[in-house]
Amino acid sequence: MKKRLFINFAVLAVFMFSGTFLGFNKAYSHCDTMGGPVVKDAKGALEKKDVAPVLKWVSKEKELEVRAAFEIALTERIKGSEAKEKADMKFFETLARIHREGEGEPFTGIKPADAIEPIEAEADKALEDGSINNLTTEMSQHLTNSVKERFDRVLDKKKHMNDSVDAGREYVEAYVEYLHYVEGVHATITGKGGHRHEEAGGDDHKERRGLETTSSKQEGAMDNVLENIPYQEQKMGSRKLVDEKYLLVMQAALKPGQSVPQHSANSNVHILVVKGEVVINLDGTESLAKEGALVPIAYKTSMSIMNKSNKDASFLIVKTPNPSEMVGE
Image (cartoon, rainbow, N blue to C red):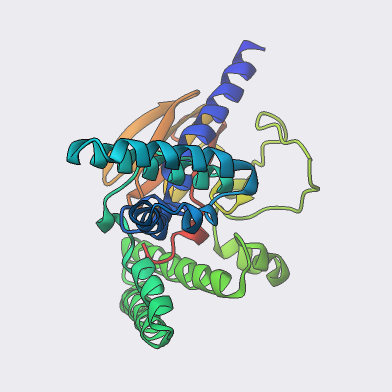
């Protein structure tokens, strides 16, 4: 019982840490910056002493709180330049915090103007200009360059994939990165979250994706990571536990001698060993991860995992955000 409680707690801790700090903070960061539209409207409202322009950023239920903060800011602003600066920033933070809470997102403070992603700045500029021509041209060029870069790499690796096992693995790594990127772009364009479009493609396509295989599951169904572990005799077994926009959780099962082939992490990853022990190779450095070990792995790190013991092993793979959200990284 203690062992199971520990694992459940560890899994919960991974989800909370990963989702809060690695995935969700990337969402909607535009509204947290000094150069974003929320602060821009707030500056104009303070200068004109009219709160109306900022009320659109909050719900009706939060309007009184914003109005109160606005009146306090106006009162403090007349006490000198230093007081004015502090009052303005406090109001910016209050407004941004309430706006973020309305989106269901955490607020970690106002960020500098240059924290805005270039594409977000371009999107705002398109609205100001009343034309999307420059925006779509830039997006198209970026997409073309990004796909071409991955395409050229995998095409070059394909020429030598049969020269040796290592050359073959390099080809597979390049192929997986290329395929994931194209699928991620397609999912974004078609409005399909995660990898749901794979379900219509049959098991052949899912098998090529390695870890990302799953069976359908009813809403609300409960998984127990210590039961029905998906071991297979001839190769690594796996199952998908969570597939959401900012979180993908897989469970991998390795019998003695089985492994996860070398590849590059396609998101921010945490490995949590729930049974046995595995050897994790990160950028050429091996380390033994025993039951209960939690191993963070940065995006694009070269990695492989192997069960070198004489007992079965299983671990969770927590990715934040879902690799489908890593488009453009």
